[in-house]
Length: 362
Image 1 (cartoon, rainbow, N blue to C red):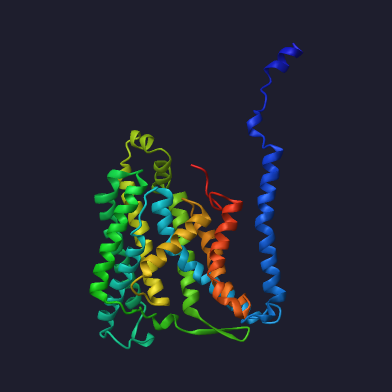
Image 2 (spheres, one colour):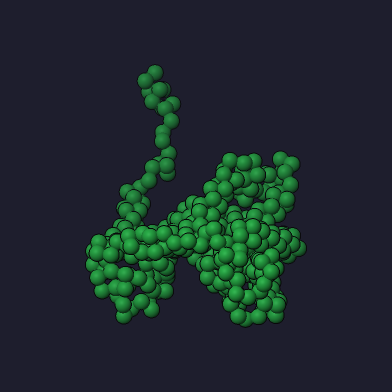
């Protein structure tokens, strides 16, 4: 009987236990990522005396404002890249026109704000109330979202899973949109104007800091929380994630997956447009900003991992911190190398996590 009991006891599958070799590989990758991070922190905190910002212990004000700059930049990256994450990461739809929707929304919002204020030049914050900023943002983002749905339904829905074809189609669309925007808006930089309610300054360790940047961060936090709740606590979000995993099963349950994906594309394009208006208010936009912010979105998605809102948050934070800290904390004679640190960040993340921080193998 004892022998029978022993024979009937299920054995734990060997494949479920990680091997020592895989654990050693994981530990090595973790060290590869943590050692450079520790060296960077030590440099910023104690040894960066020959930089424009100075070490954090000697110049705490510069350190705190630089960190806030990184957070607010990360907020902008997240709003734009979260839309790209929804479309490319969750739906596995390649939309290289994401940057064009970003720029189109910005131009629409700028023109609408000028009409609401009643003048096209020399607009100052006192001329703009909150409605004169929020309404152009919503209208510009909604137009971008509507065009995004048209692009999806007409050009992309019928070739789902054909990434190269989708990339070529949306690249052609982005070129057409870029030419039309250039003809309409010209090549000079244009900008939205923040409302007077958010254009103040606060003092942090003796440094003045614009509250408009904190307003950007607040919007990004609201967007992130809303996306997480939508994807994890609503029926639509559950259906979206299920449809990505197994479309045929979702269709068999009687759910119109086409409508679900159209809604997802609308939200993703809306976020791109929303980010365009925020960037236009923060730094202005001009011809070429579409490609630049498409690249930013790609970097964030690669760092964070496909289809993960948590990954978009983590990727935006890392990318924002690198772009903020590199110019201030590199030696003064080498600040022009700060752009290279973006690629160093990509290399380190992919060395530790080949699918991104929160990505998973297909």
